[in-house]
Image 1 (cartoon, rainbow, N blue to C red):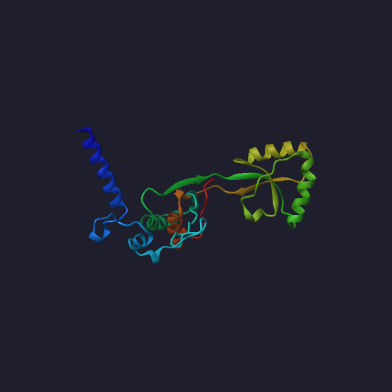
Image 2 (image 1 turned 135 degrees about the horizontal axis):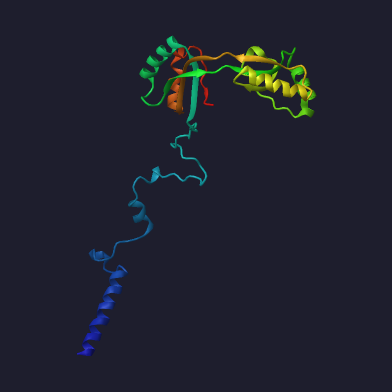
Length: 218
C-alpha cells in the first residue's frame, strides 16, 4: 500500500513538472505566460505615463499665497453726522459683530515743548545738546507743532507746569508748556480682527470713512 502511494506521488510530481514547463501547451493545457509581451499587453494607456524628477514641481499644484494675520484696526474720531453715516455703511458692508462704533471722550493734553525749529537738522542738534541730561522724549501727535520736541505729556496744565519747573532746575531753560490738542468727543470705529476679507470691505467704504485713516489699535 505504501509503495502504491509513493508511486502515485511521484507520478503526480512528474505531471506537474511537465505541465509547468508547457509541454501540453499545444492542447491548451499549460500555465499562463508571464513574459514581457504579455505584461506589456496588460498595461492601460502606457503612453500616458510620465517620469518626473524628484524635485520637479507639480504642474497643476496651485501657488501658495501668503495670508496676512488678522489685526485690530481703528479710525476716528467721527462727529455725530459722520458717525451716523458710517454706521449705516458698516451695517450694510460688514458682518454683524465684526466691528464697533463707540462714543469716546478725548481729554485735553498738555506737553512740555521745545520748538518750533527751523528744520529736522536743528531738532537733531537740540537732542544731542540735551543728551547728557538723559531726558525722555515723546513723539508729537499734533503735526502743527512739528518740527519740535516733546519732553512729556500731561492731562492738565498744572501737571505740565510742575514738570517744566523740575526740568528748569536741571538746566532746561528754553522749554515751555503748550496744549498739544484740546479735549474733544466723538465716535471711534474699531475692527478687532480685520483679516484680508474685512480689509477689502473696509477699503470699499470710501467716503463713509470721512478721510479718516485706518490704523492699528493702540
